[in-house]
Every structure is written in structure tokens, then in C-alpha cells.
Image (cartoon, rainbow, N blue to C red; front, side, top):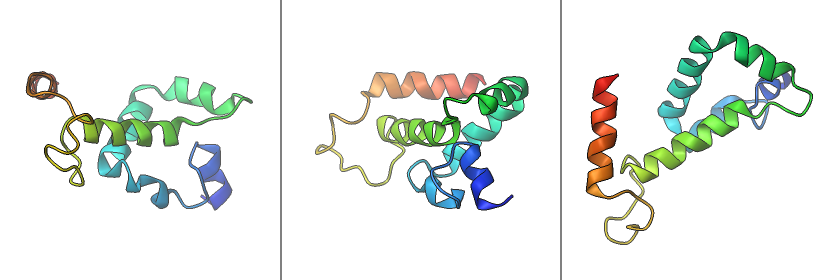
Length: 100
């Protein structure tokens, strides 16, 4: 694919690897899983004339999930307490992952 086709899929620029720095591999996994499970929906979303921001939205969601669930290595324990979830929410999140 050439650079402009990546932008049609919702990436910010012509080189999608630069968009993944915030969400990392988790964001790529979210995108792949969603596309595999929702092929027809993705095709319809892609043809929408209003814009297709799926890729960058998924990357941002992954970034915030990493922060909230203590998965981001740049957080400072104690200092960034308002950014991440409490212990109970983290346990529930881990249980949910194990159920899938």
C-alpha cells in the first residue's frame, strides 16, 4: 500500500508505524481483532464520506487503557495516582481478560 492509502484507513499520516508509539502493540492487536470480527462494518465505515478515524481512535483507546490499567511504563507510582485505576478495577480487568 502506498502512503495515502494508509490515511484512508484512519491513520494520521502516510507511515502508520509512527502512529503506534502511544498505544504500542496493544493498539495493533485491537485493530486486527476488530477488523477480523467486523469485516462488513469496517467496509461500510471506510466508505463513509465524513471520514474514517478508526485506526487512530483504536490507538488512542489502547493508550488510555495502558495508562488506566497500570500497563504504561512511564507512570510514576504515587504521583500519577489520578491517572490509573484502583486495585479492585485492575483485578476485575484481569479477570475479564482471563475469561476470553
